[in-house]
Image: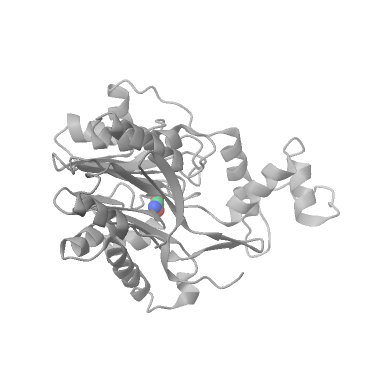
Length: 363
Ligand code: GLY
């Protein structure tokens, strides 16, 4: 069954092959799942395994929704959010709007382990990271700086004017938008300009969430993100909010989220999913129930719901799992891309389509 894992739960419960190590993550987490599963196989703690998994995305300049290379706020500054939860000790840690650190998931774990607090934000979080030896780094890549500049150029006042373009007194450019963009950035490839324009007009809320269950039944989770691109400085999404972007209850299971954090915070998504599972729902039904609450917040008005994406990942302690999305996927330039999630078990990492609440009409 696409998007859920009742079969694994049945196998875990029957004990036919013994309980298995299992990792689930968002669609950008295939490498993350593979690394985390490998670490679980070596007996490494579930939280260390999922953090090592998401570190791949945090350090990858090509993942523009997480860590280094993540798209910046409206001032061109990268601000990151992350949270961790460790099932066996029932502890949590998180950071929000942290700057200058590629791997906020590691700082969230330090907050959990080395302080009497759960959440540090902004300058305090950055100073805390420095205290633990993380030297401030520039997280803006040339690619994300270009995307930010092009976003600034895409903005217009009521008269169609923008201060970040070439000015009223500049010679007129035949051929309009794309030609003007090429003229402004002559050394940038057409492919990169197309990417930057796409990001300017479709801001992302990407994110990676990763949840793990080991053969001893221990669970942990992590969520890490650069948040909404071009956000107001200081905007915090759902990822560092314990109970929204991530929740783990060692007795029941774990859940996490990617997509538009504002919608998730309003339904305390991860916590609501875990509570649904506590009351007997499958991972799939637990996620769909919460997605229905999100839709209800808009009186099921699909015109408004179409303006965002929201995705959940859930893993029950018995191994039942699901990846679920509000919409079945996205249309971009006439091409449909299904919403997917990653999971790894038995030494293999896979991508699978999410179960979904709504079918997106062709754009
Ligand atoms: N889910 C990521 C965010 O909204 O920031």
